[in-house]
Length: 279
Image 1: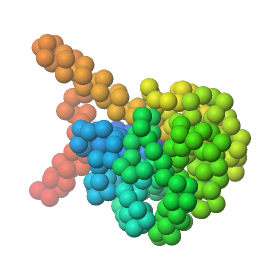
Image 2 (image 1 turned 90 degrees about the vertical axis):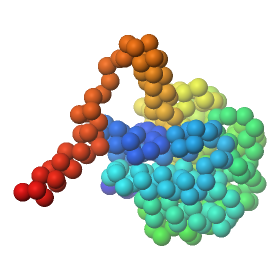
Image 3 (image 1 turned 120 degrees about the vertical axis):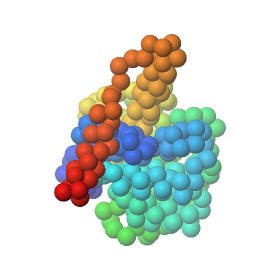
């Protein structure tokens, strides 16, 4: 069942951030059936660079296609600013939909963007973002492909202006609203009270601007989707650092063996196919 149908049924969605086919397979193996392709994660894993506008549309779209090829899970794909102007937004929406995404997140930062929990962010005008959302809506082939409108204006213009932007983005055709970086529970509650007729996104980033709350509590407040965009990347950083440190000390720790990896990656199917062709 797609994201749109599940939201219509009133389901609440906990969504891990992934960044490559391997992380997608790991999450699917743990029964997550909706995944969030994080621009932060792709920038880190593909380029080893910060989420500051270095990753191109082509690189993100290629990564999305590779992820969609190995998973049956629904994918919310980070579309950043749409990678430029209105023509770029059109290309990004059409490309992501064709490559297998079920939803795209578009934000109102200036290009090149910055991670939503870092300093020195700037936003475009409300009118410019409204135009981007309208173009995004016109560019999709199916209404089942959802447009998530994100505003990064809260930390720049305040909560009231962020909510005004949210209203305008909904009127322009956004299916889901994402007000980034509330810095306390009162702001989270206010957002849910102001927007009780459209699905809302909460973004839980360890060490970010928003306090960490349980998914259950956020759902109780009124959010429909809770993203964890960097949680797995942070876990990988810790695990790799620990493993590399112990390997350097010549005291390697216990890790998944080759059999575990082979099963996850589908080697058993390859071997079965080889046997069948030989017989």
